[in-house]
Image (cartoon, rainbow, N blue to C red; front, side):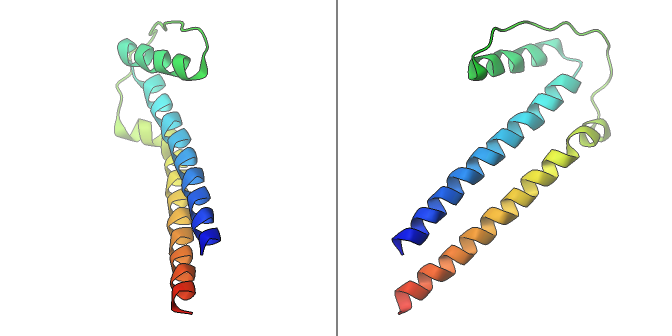
Length: 106
């Protein structure tokens, strides 16, 4: 039973890492699509803190409106990856719970 709980813990940590990395990348894509210079600079500043690279502010050259279809066109693959990782995680937890219940009943 302890081994199943340990594997559940490892699956949880993998899930949290994958989802946080994918969400970070989705927000990066949205910030880069946005015509708002402040949003880009704030996001790049936080990214420079995380990655420990020097921060360089960006200049916005073109002004295009940020629309849902345009954003969805850029991030649909990553949103689909978050969906599949979540399904994988929930399935793993379900099977882990079944094994724990079998150990408890025997």
